[in-house]
Image: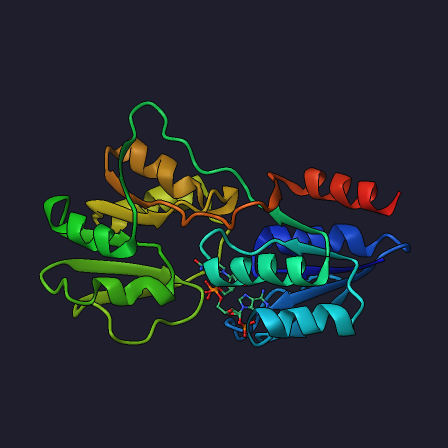
Length: 246
Ligand code: NAP
């Protein structure tokens, strides 16, 4: 059984590592190619875009893919939509791995917003020293906020446009609560901006912000393609594959 995992997340890598040990499966992970030195999963790997939904459909046919697992980031909207179209066109079973959204706890001061642009609009009223964790591709949405100070954390260096006063921190999760607390304190952060990725690896910043009483601007997820079956965790994905192969 040939399984194609659309990756780019830690879950996708763990899923590939888990499945690659099964001799009944051929596992290929697909990466977009955005990160210069990605952590590579076990199994086969292909890198780069497919060329839209028709390109992905062609790849599924040519490589005789029996099951498609969309384990991309919840904000990677285009590839998830393409996967839904290509799976329907080719009759390939599709499952989307979607970790649950983060939930606010007592003491959280969250400001949910629908988009990065809305996050930028909300910032000036919330604080002048901003910890921006929305990734390098999102930094342009904040470029006009030249009266605020930014600490921008990303895996790869962001490119302009970006806010005039930006300190860049190149780091890859997982992050610890102690580390996040210290980071917020050392940089005298007044407000945090994050996407609702739901990832455990990046959740400690939310706890640290709660402890320090800081507001958090939370960018809500885009809607997932309709009609696609989802699983919240790796066990759900493995169960789905087992059911397919019996
Ligand atoms: P996107 O906007 O949904 O996709 C843009 C294009 O990139 C797609 O149309 C596709 O090109 C290509 N692509 C995306 N993921 C791919 C994959 N796994 N394998 C092959 N091609 C892929 O994606 P994005 O938001 O730029 O994210 C790119 C990658 O980074 C994803 O794999 C995602 O899991 C990961 N990531 C994203 C975020 C985020 O916040 N967006 C955060 C962490 C990790 P073609 O149309 O040519 O096939």
